[in-house]
Image 1 (cartoon, helix red, strand yellow):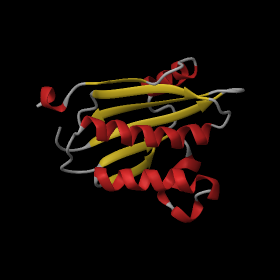
Image 2 (spheres, one colour; image 1 turned 60 degrees about the horizontal axis):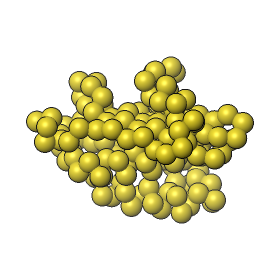
Image 3 (cartoon, helix red, strand yellow; image 1 turned 60 degrees about the vertical axis):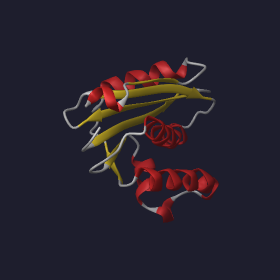
Length: 147
């Protein structure tokens, strides 16, 4: 796959579990990959930063190449600030962000942005479904088949 790709990521939480999801779209807006899962937590921001890690891992496993940038669109303003500004990251998440930074170097150019309010209904639905899922769900088509 060549050109611009965007991962919409989201984390949601209820009393004792959190769900996460990601949808990778091409420049035409067609969904090319998706994932969802759950973690034992009650913090939406922690679930969402974990989703950024999973999105980068999924992208790297797919072995897609970029001519442009990989955009990661976040639903949480807090997580957006953590990703965009290293000085705002909580000390307790330094190891997590070190892993994210390593993956960003492997991917190439990654740009973080904020999603519009209620901007991605498919991704939100996947996050809700992820709360009840014991294992991660991933689906994508090989890049060769898309050319």
